[in-house]
Image 1 (spheres, rainbow, N blue to C red):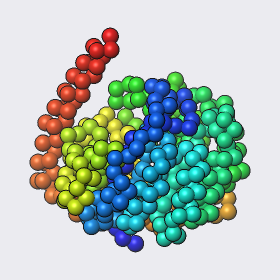
Image 2 (cartoon, rainbow, N blue to C red):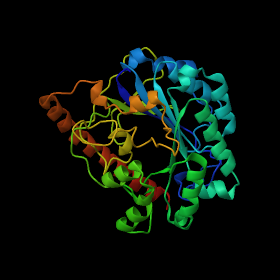
Image 3 (tube, rainbow, N blue to C red):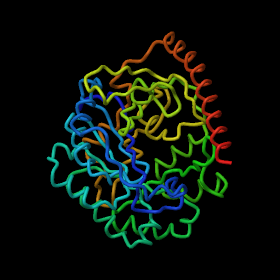
Image 4 (cartoon, rainbow, N blue to C red):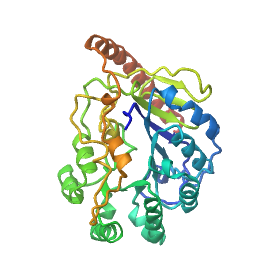
Length: 368
């Protein structure tokens, strides 16, 4: 098993969706009916740009759209191009785009499927409302029987509380294990808060009954400001597949286009000091070890389950790879260098925050 070199979160510029979940940012801003975009870069170019040699080793890619990730027709070829570089890939999706699962399961060789996983978002109320529950679990069965990894994740909402018993019953009957639970955040509020009218204690009591390591860790670090040195930017980043821009994080100036020229060296630079109120998706960034000294569950532990027959949701290859920490495949910086980077980050973060606040004020003024 090769050491994990980097974690890259790929964003697909699609807001179109097959569902209308009330807690979703896309629904709140009525962006779900936009047309599916034609992606600028070909699968071949993306594959070359994300080669093992250029990235320095085998990486883990998370692929997610603002809307439904698998709607663009190019996705089957793009995902294959990344897998063919030797990387491990997990895809966030709502489980309804059957044609895409069929394409991947029939076109991909077994070797690629071993390194492919699907994060199925369990939008219970929408699936029930649209009579899509059987289709949803049929697609999970399809990828599972074809040797891929999967994980089932529920977005908790106050409206879903009366149906918790039904949610559990569906999970146990269909998969032999309970789903994982994430922590919903209100993206209309600066720096985000938990999207619920419940107190934090009530929220934990109600959703903690799923015994999900994902929920336990996310709620633990929610609103917990990170002060440690962060290797994000050096050990990974966020790649916009529409623009080709790789950012160290979503609140930093550290950005560069890495898709225009697939052979140009990438300048990986760490952010050093976090510019967020808390690490919004820390289950991935922190779970994989962007802050090496921080003790966390492994990312595999926050994605896997063992069903009532003793079967894992993650294949052995995927589980072993995601059980690593990024420090296993990378060298640590010395303290002097870390201090220099953090000093620079303090200045950059201050400028970024000033520009961000100014842009919000201007936008608010224009909308009046």
